[in-house]
Length: 318
Image (cartoon, rainbow, N blue to C red; front, side):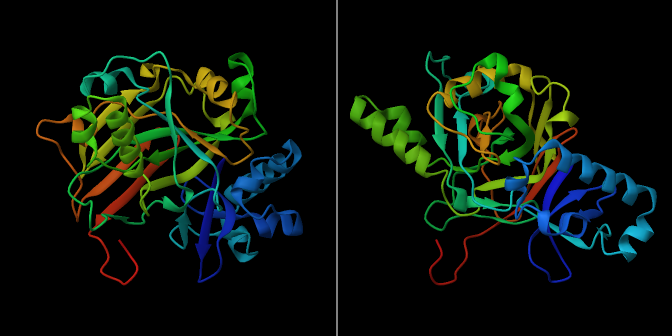
């Protein structure tokens, strides 16, 4: 099941389920006042509700004209997809978690997992523009990533049980301003390294720097999350092309390690890291510029596509 947040015909954002042709089933039209307000809240719903949505999807696919006439289905092309979860959620990201990415950055695998929190106010949906911040626009990089979306409360779980807490998967572009790279490479003291690392993480927090989506695909649709091909293109040129089998810390172990500290609620996101091919890993580096189009894709999850724009000149923006 492909769960989305959409808007249509000038209406408000609503939770929906997308058909293969791009038409969107309106969950409020199906569930009425039982509809969770957002996809994030829906992730924690019981199986019976998902079975009801499944049945409605089958009916809409069998007779789309009747579903459109009844107001249950928005035709393909009439719905605009937004960031899929529909509300601000906790987003924890693994860093340096692909062997290939460590190699391209000249790093050795560390004993401890690198991780950080991504600003939920930086989230945008597919089709929305990544805006280059005026003061930090010269080294903005892309990082295509596979994300776990939790389906139940998850804290202090074992790797063996971890996947039972996963409700679905989505994609993220962990956009990053790399201005702190030189300082990180030049650090010679613990204090210098600490400040450079903090500045590196701040470069990931700008508005529009977390494209997410296009949908949350429920876990039952994904066979083995440890064997998925991820591709990132910039202007149709392949920049990243990897399989999740290259993860240094696999998804079950990643959930185990981070759930020791975090309580993940339904709808929260855990991003698993990015593979080789980021802009900073190329010689010379390939950073984003106005007019570029970035696409992150995994078969079965769809394509997260975002154009790149220059910084806004509107008052109050950066």
